[in-house]
Length: 428
Image (cartoon, rainbow, N blue to C red; front, side):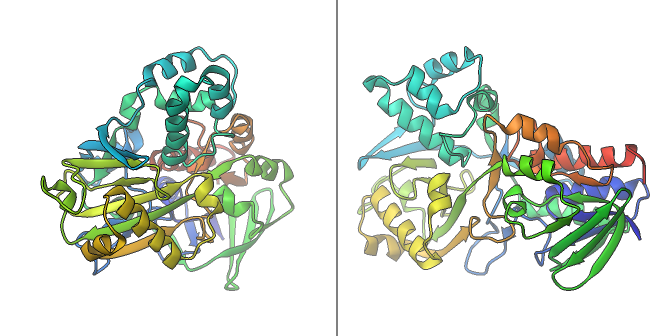
């Protein structure tokens, strides 16, 4: 028997394993994938010139858990900067990430006393025709940045998130996010944590102080406590049967909403958009972000790193509803980019060196990208923060109640906090 079983070797699971094993506890980590990291997945593919991020990519703002861990692991990071370009109704113009009326919108949002969806807030306060571009921009931002449904996303939560521009500033770990995961993995192994990859949990049988886990591969593991770091979207599907049932907690899990994301990686032969005379392509000097009304609307570069790689981003309800296969999605990406750069599909394809699509909605071990707060999230998280008989615990970005919900920071913070709670409450 081990002291603690942790399901999931993502950022939360690895952090919790490190904290618990440091205190001398025996820890077993079960992971369905053949690798650690979960939705952090840096790809080292031959066709791409640099390691590319299939999943998490940015550090948003000054985040204590993330920056502290990066410093400990001796991993540097750099700011993503450059110009923002907009392509709306076929028209290209250099602009800002935020619409003209952004400050007016934030001021009105600050006055909000009772929570409602951001769509309802816009309907109440910015319904006039003159605010049409603002409404469209806010909804695009909610869908793109938070991967959220504007009809469900909490206005108060978004206010907290958007109140500081620093929270919207993006940094990248130099060399890729996998370095952070690799550091945690090695630290855990040094402390005797046992990892079992490609072991998909199917059954959890529990009673106070005792847990038995059976995997789809037929393996059985026994412990005193268990920490579940699986995304709520996966738990909702019922792929893991928990006996006796935990109805109150499952009801709260069903209240957590997960945003959809389909990510595109397109490397070109050259950064043609940086050239002043870039015909037949549009010129977008110093390009960082592109916001558009194309079917794949959001794209960004690696600026200031001079690699001709564009990352595409389809998020929110459109990503959740998209049933296309990878080939059709890549074609959609090509069509979007040809529209954005004002060229033909043939001219766009001529410049392409490598392409890849990462559909996190179709991934059976994530079923989406990351969680976002709705009007009902706070009460659900209050329930999920409470262990069941000091035996079953939950952690992960989706189970974190702070403003950083949905981020790597949230996963690290949640994993740390819950692991410490496991050690203090009826210690194993």
